[in-house]
Image (cartoon, rainbow, N blue to C red; front, side, top):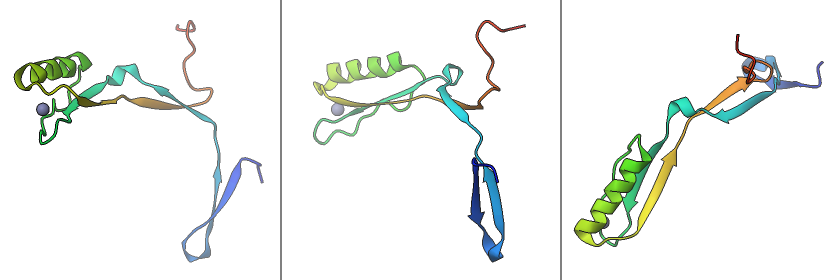
Length: 96
Ligand SMILES: [Zn+2]
């Protein structure tokens, strides 16, 4: 048995052996970033909605403050991540 193996008890008494393979997770800029701003003024439920440009979400907040005087926002940002098996990722400067 490899030291990178895990025995998992399955249904009906079967056993599966899972090998652990090293992987790495990194931000994937090609997936972009989604930004959403939420006004947190008492009683206000306004939101920018999810936008693919953080600058547009910021502009929405500025406009909302100008229209309402509400000046506090909760901000959410999401990005994407890619998982690669170690040794499979392309190395910088090694392009054909
Ligand atoms: Zn508001």
